[in-house]
Image 1 (cartoon, rainbow, N blue to C red):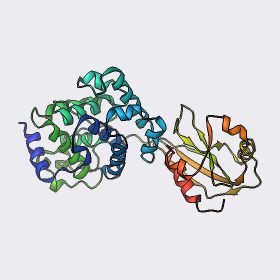
Image 2: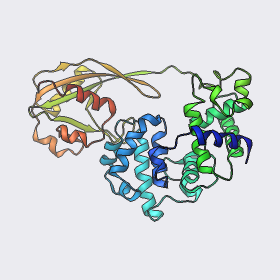
Image 3: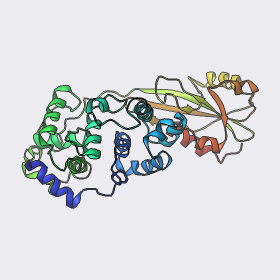
Length: 348
């Protein structure tokens, strides 16, 4: 076996993570779900979401048959909701085209929504022991430092180099363990800040450590000014404590999720509120900022208590009045759910 893989597997046997819930059993469905959840999200956060998700939808056919609102409710709080919609659609395609299973053919698997080259490799390597390299964020960091590769990993030329090294280091035996090992090393030892080089099994041959470049590799993404947008969220609550929700459109952030109606400013918020319900007064709640990957959203909540819902709203499938029990079963954006939880104790 190659020296890189040999050293890494020896470290993994003693120090790697062997008790993650998707490792027991380590089947394709559970590996796939964990890989999608772990995109942009730490293991410590994912574990509870994973366990809740597989308890509700324990296998691929159950996921394919579930209503989208159910899938989004189980995902609520993880963010990047397009991942959940891709997961749902990929499961449906597997039922339609692949006999209700994730395909073992690499090209067919990588072609499914939300999977791609690295995730397909991780599924085939971990669930079936097939030799395919992976290149998630942790692996990019390990390889960029070990080989002293400069340039942002998102650049095509840099990524190409990293894929070449990822493939060269992947062994023919113990591929599942190796795949978990290199992810574990990046997550627990070769971390973004303050890497524990003294505990790394690859340290003796690491160029970044040798040249004092661990703080500079991988090269950061070129910085851009993050724009700030603003919105007013309307919280219309009736005498029964129900809140008016609106399903967001198919485009843009939080697409397809149930959320609060929004307006560009306070005047527009009042006009919209009067269209949705009969209202008397409003209470301006403390504004807050929610940070996305590409912009910041300043949210100004406006609470209309004691609103009276006209019957016409019931005929609009994109609007619905929900009580607390119904809210729990819906996929809501995390800041909206938090906001509604904060006002739950106020007088209706």
